[in-house]
Image 1 (cartoon, rainbow, N blue to C red):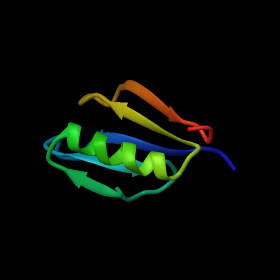
Image 2 (cartoon, one colour; image 1 turned 45 degrees about the vertical axis):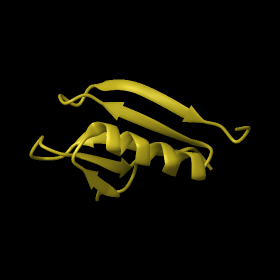
Image 3 (cartoon, helix red, strand yellow; image 1 turned 30 degrees about the vertical axis):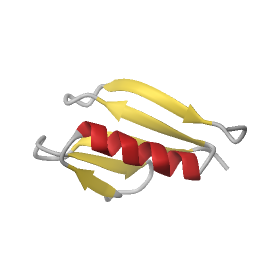
Length: 72
């Protein structure tokens, strides 16, 4: 089984940030700030290793990727 991948993306209105799990249509959660979404995504990724957090810029481009291996 592959990594669970959490994407941090601007929502449709570009005024909030959401966490989406790759392969699922609906966001897991929505936040007022990118930082809050990132903190939650880190917790989710840490709890579901192996996993990744992919952070996107406001324009949708990938800004950064964090990998969480099973080795901690």
